[in-house]
Length: 150
Image (cartoon, rainbow, N blue to C red; front, side, top):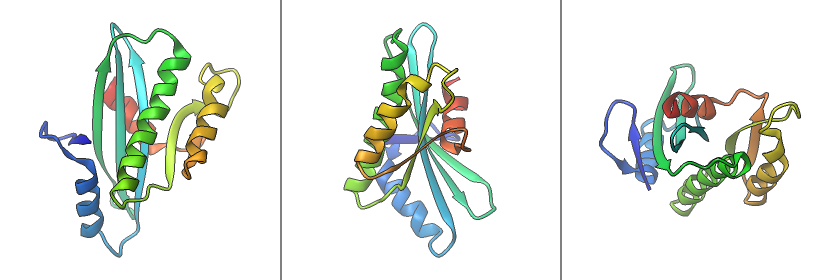
């Protein structure tokens, strides 16, 4: 599964990169956040991100961007965000890397359209052994994906 850095267009295997990065910061408090966001324009763009946070030294972001034909159905597009995040988490797990939490860009508040996906997506993520986080929590991976997809 190929990802990129914000500073380079050179693709690399995400599992190998996460292992190297984790080794580099072994013994330090490293947090890894995973999430996805999408946006519709003439087509649908998804950005899946991994955000690495080492103690208080800031964040390092890698991402995968995917452009697909326009998905006009909101539920289907938002479900695609959960699917992409889970796909990365499972790929990392298959390669010996555990991601504890997946950040989902859905809102717990029923006044937001994304609320319609919350129950199904959280159930899906948690059935696979990951913890799901949704808004109103701070979601670094989702915010990073939002900047990339935009």
